[in-house]
View (cartoon, rainbow, N blue to C red):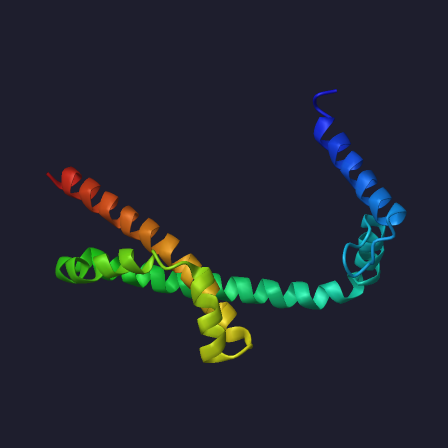
Amino acid sequence: MEEGAPFFLLLLLLIVWESVTVLLKVEEWLLPAPSAIFIEGIESSRNLYGHLLSTTELALSGFFIGSCIGLLIAAILHLFPGVKDAVYPLLILSQNIPIIVLAPLLVIWFGFGMLPKLIVISLVCFFRLRLHHWTVFARHHTSLSIISR
């Protein structure tokens, strides 16, 4: 019974939710019943492909841009220690600004198009991949210097 417990709990919650919305006659705009959400999901599924394609394209583009910039910055920081000493504290400082704070500013500056979304995705990927690439460069540099001795 322990293996199926989460499923049965979810089923119980859906039954209680459906019952509450029907018995208390809750307005659909306030709290739609799970059955209404399921029906709407089925009816709207034909529009899903276009949105899925757009979202996938945007995510992959942002990942590619963030990866390229992250790799470039990591290479520059690794090859030029003076640049690393000057820029690295600013990179660490910029990571303290939550993306959720930047998103409304990007919308104000660039409008409601794809550009603000692309910038947010690129920033999220950039910070993670810059750190990863820089760490890999540092490890390989140390390994190569040990091997060459």
